Image 1 (cartoon, rainbow, N blue to C red):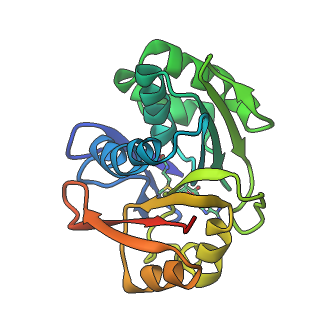
Image 2 (cartoon, protein in one colour; image 1 turned 180 degrees about the vertical axis):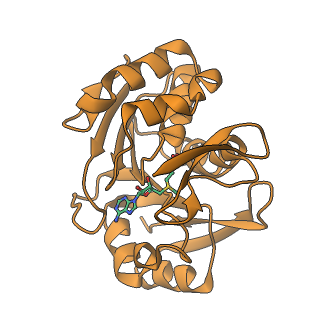
Length: 223
Ligand SMILES: C[S@@+](CC[C@H](N)C(=O)[O-])C[C@H]1O[C@@H](n2cnc3c(N)ncnc32)[C@H](O)[C@@H]1O
């Protein structure tokens, strides 16, 4: 059961009663998503990679907030995106709509997501001239791919509530989907995560965290 709640910046999130955790930071869902995934992730990646479209893999598609802000950035800058979200427990379309995230993006991005959400759970959908979306309805553990992604948004529930998502094996598994030079970003930073990323050859960067959190992590796969 998921319950809608408001975070400190006024944006909504969901509270997952089974896991006992919110989908986003209580300090501000919108500001965390912008800080970690758009600014430290997508914008940084486009500065490094001239290649287009940018291929993004998100672990934990959830409410689609990171996707919507990425699509909004694409619309503002003319950047083509191919986006794959992995989601083991997809929300219903009604739950997605209940977030009211329409207020943060243009109507084309909101309508194309909400109108095609169920189709995107089956196969890749062209949502706009710039953006293609597929939501892989599966677990990260069973997801497989060639190393085709420029960028990974690692947005799993926290290590306290879902430690299996942060195991050395799973971190190695997800990083195998990155292209050489690809970027991994997440809102959390622990010694164990840093060691797991280094073990598969990535270089770690510690960055200032979103409001309410001291630090976040970005890592780069060698060329
Ligand atoms: C922190 S929430 C993601 C928030 C999301 N990025 C958003 O913007 O709403 C974590 C997500 O991971 C999903 N999840 C949990 N276990 C998973 C697994 N084994 N594989 C893939 N997704 C999983 C949950 O259902 C949830 O949607």
